[in-house]
Image (cartoon, rainbow, N blue to C red; front, side, top):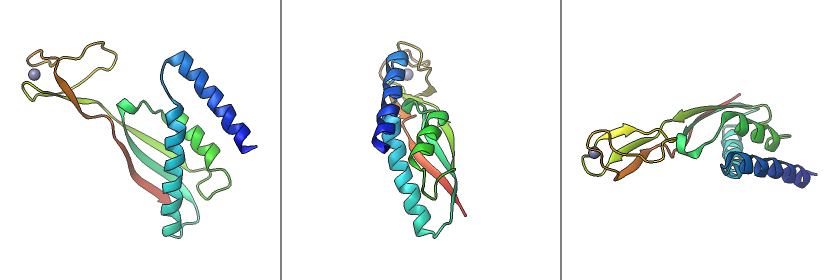
Length: 139
Ligand SMILES: [Zn+2]
């Protein structure tokens, strides 16, 4: 039955992928790993229940709180993390210009990204790809 449900979720994800053009399937795998870490932490701290999971996630990962919560609710069923709330804080993308070392925020909707200081297109991402568990609330 669990596999059926997983299959079902994958179907939804795939459909979303086709519609949005974003590969969200990754979100499920990440949530699965997250749950493992959360349960391990809860066990180590002899917790009765997991209340909240505070995350800092880079904008580039394209995760949404809504979907992570959905996956988490499904995966955590029957564990002490069931009902735990995912709180996701997005870390915006920051780029650094290779030419003049200027740091700047980037609008991902733009087709081409160039340095606002010198106009160079040689830029690298220095923030926006994070996945950090900031804190886990347990009782
Ligand atoms: Zn520059």
